[in-house]
Length: 550
Ligand code: ATP
Ligand code: MG
Ligand code: MG
Image (cartoon, rainbow, N blue to C red; front, side):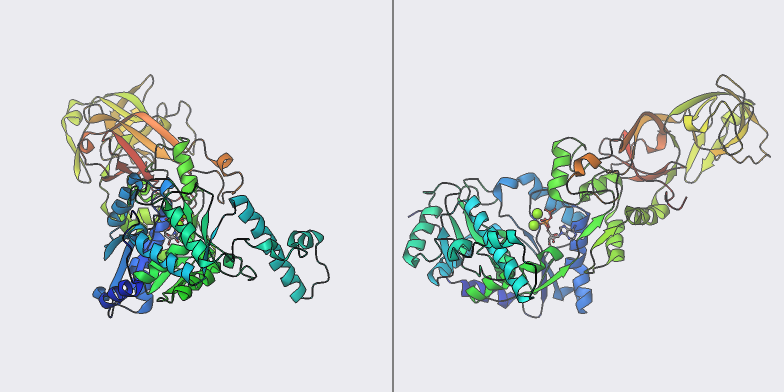
């Protein structure tokens, strides 16, 4: 009675998809809504929405289709916030999916296909606990290792492998429920589906090949019981299909031509096609590329979530995060991110990209378009003496007007009580140029004097006059981690405790006061900055010059 409406004949579903797919090449971008998208996803999007077609020589835009699919099969880790952020970030990056789908849109079709697999003797309900399944998996793994050693005529066969293989117990490597009759499997699966079985007590498993050398052929779990509401299907289901069962089937149902994934999935090709062949449905072509890694940061949603949850950062969109939303708030444009992705390209080499390369694309993008202004991070006050006329004049910088008043501020770092030959800042009795304006000589005790303009001093400092100054907060960022390649086992100890430096008494030229969030600006000598969502805060995108080039 309360069994869901099944999709009926999967072949009809397929026929529909084939009909709309005529002459078109289709890819898909399938993120799971269990976190925010990051720069690794930017690489995947760049591939799926663009590079793949270029590689295939498909220039005609109307023949290019990419489906944006929410891979939503773990309801307890997924939520609406993530769902919304994914949609926003895909659009912001400039990609237009032909369709937005969810793996959960296919829950009924997937369920019908599972019944088909049971009827064909290719799936069974298993009552092993997760620990028991793990134990069997261990035995199967040991047996595979032993077989490989024997096949290669190895002289030394480790004793622990022999013990773990348990050859005296032939069935120890697989579920004792494997050969139940179809009718029993159907009845149990029905019970699972109706919520009559406790979480963890039963799973539906695929009857694959426990003797295979490829370990991903070990009878995979296709369905597990979870009494969790789902962001898309609500309370409709309490059995949820797994990634391994759904990914291939949904790729097939959506008639994806190229299913592009990262290299760690290469060993899962065999099981991907096992499921499709068992159901006798269309086989997409699978293509693997290397996963993007960047120095001094992590690109795993689990780790990024931990940084958010433990308040190491201010949120998923903290400007230090390698997330799309963090990079956006940091001042990166979609063009800068996509140029970076074009530049790193797509290969099968394991790669760790220097983050300096990403910064390079921020500078290339910002240099020609970010207007210039002046700001001081830590105001150092100087009261000036000089002819009245110099204080009445307007000074023109690139694109804006400066006023010199009798009180000005330079940056504290540009002042020293004791001068030295390698220091171009201000010191007692020394002359510097205030950029775009006049020369001054420092006297002492915060007093200075406007002097002869014809001298060309080495030091040309940024400054803000009292009259032009507006208070604000500048936030400068450093690497999120202290080592280039983060260690899996102790990554939380490698977090940089000083990745954010806040200057909360900074001063900026008043003209930037009402700029919209995310507007970029070059603060002379300090770096490229970007207006935060709170207009009083400016986040530093990047220094003006590369640290390594210095
Ligand atoms: P995580 O381990 O962070 O959860 P994931 O691969 O499970 O990563 P998904 O959201 O499921 O994340 O991935 C969506 C798509 O983006 C997949 O096709 C995946 O291969 C790709 N992708 C994810 N991370 C990277 C990365 N670092 N480099 C390239 N592609 C990636
Ligand atoms: Mg995934
Ligand atoms: Mg994942």
